[in-house]
Length: 154
Image (cartoon, rainbow, N blue to C red):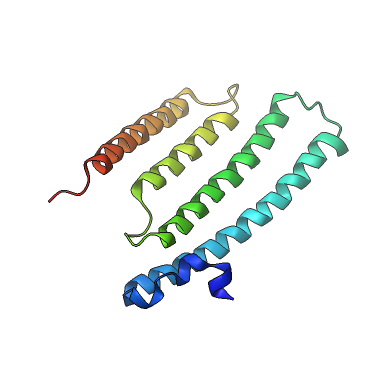
């Protein structure tokens, strides 16, 4: 059953070292756990969207409704991308989570924060701090990409 549902885990199992097997098992457990979180978040997302748009009969063009819906959608997307990065690492033999993917997920989380912030009540210093975070992560991403293009140093 494991081989049919999770071929990434069992691929080349006999040729893996003990630690690589451990990594794959941990990755499988994380994948199942995050998948559960995504399913629960999706259930609540659908419930909230139905409630916001149809039960409460609020104006669907109200920016607060859009912010709430986009916040939930982006949260689910970030969790799915994180889960996808874990599954991808099981397919390849090299290392665990790649730094490039983690930086991109962090950028997505900060962009989500920008999209859902209330501009009427936000402290300007918080905007500056978040902007510095995005710029720093962008620089970090660029550096990691440059390093990955050159390949491993010898």
